[in-house]
Image (cartoon, rainbow, N blue to C red; front, side):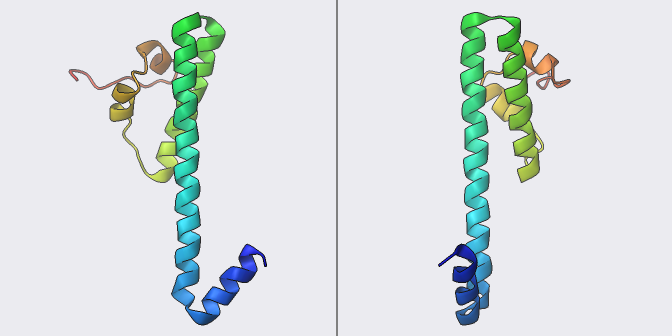
Length: 104
C-alpha cells in the first residue's frame, strides 16, 4: 500500500486525519532538512578553522547561505541567535552581505 492509498483510506474514515498525517510528514521533513543544513554549517566552519583557506571560506559561506535560506523558508527571518550560537565568523558573513547585530 502506498502513502497515497493510506491517506485515501484515512480520509474516508476521518478526513481531518489525512491532513494531519500529511502536515506531520511535512514538519518532519522540514526538521530533518534544517538539521542537515546546520550540521553542514558546523562541519564547514570547523574545516575553515583548521585550513583557513579560500576554498574553505567559500564552502563555509555557501553552507551558511543555504542554512539561512532553509530558515527563511520555514519562517525564521532573524539569524542573530544562530550567528552567535554557531560562532559564525564575520569573514563568512561578509560574503553573504549580512552582519551580526551591533552591540551584542
